[in-house]
Length: 391
Image: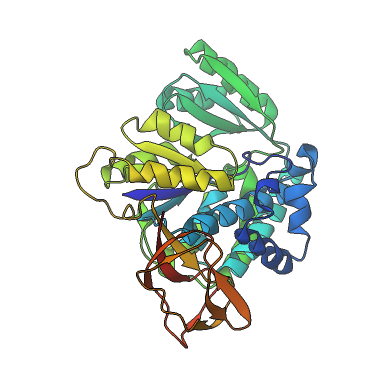
């Protein structure tokens, strides 16, 4: 089975939206700008690395790139059987699974970024990655430091992040090295995220969460707080609140997803941090990533190969590299052309019909194997219109 994963803060980089500007999925940027009340396109194209380090900027920018990547893979018919996001990425997972709609997702991420920025400015904190030490020994190092320092992220075997007051993080890091850690790396962040230092952000975010409508997900979503799959709607109110002050149990989540039958992990968004954690945590699984349009075809080709650690077709892996879905470029009523293309070859750019006044063209040459929308059907943007087998 395939699981879509979504990165968190720290994966961003300047100009990370440039590869997507000419892709149809870029239309989400205008919608996000309207929902957030700010120029999201500027964040993705023009903001420099220093500006993107600000939590209020990095979280929104990373979330939108994940949504663009999600839209891109959906347009070609790649499907998932589950979702999981790291920290901020949990919000991407919830939108992708249909638990929260896109507009509310933008609003929540914007509020989360602002709340965490303010909390970090109120309480001086930092984070550090402890490399090459077992989880229990990292916990022991924090306990022995005897101050405001805690485990914030269980990312992968031998890769744990601690956070808290700068002096205490330094003390715990020194103890961790005495206990056998290979390295302790300071992280360029402006706060002690996923610790009690974020209590004020949790209180502020809870007000926004309480105003949000939560729905049942289309597939299970694995939560950071307990590393478990959730298939309901309303439990996310408490899970999102707890997430800000609780450690991210990502390694445990990956183990649980593997135990539940997931064999392929597709990271959607900037960077490849989660791809790296899957390689370290579940060597028998296949990690893939999509952070640029060119990655979409690479994922399709990878999925067309032999399934990983399994025999026979897996849920979410039915689409092969020779198959594509033509999707609606807009919302409205679909009207096909008068020609019957079913079973016939068409060139790239062939007009298949209209959605309202907007033309629907196939981006690929191939054979039309079937129509997924009928004459007079009201469709949404990105809804599949036709199934095409490429030449």
